[in-house]
Length: 86
Image: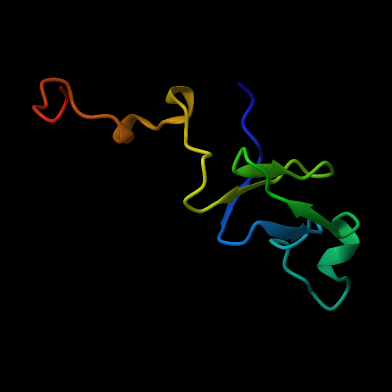
């Protein structure tokens, strides 16, 4: 499974993306010059939406989008022999 380049958690089902929100500006340019056109996206029943320009994924807090087993980090799983696993 290919991972999105960036995942943003949000509490709103409607989000905007311009691809440049994490780019710092200097006096020479504005971050929006390095991004893409600003678009509005709606998170649907899947619980997430991907930007068609920059592939940034917006995940709704408390929504149905939960990490799958292939998306877990090693620290997310219990240690072998841990009594917390039934």
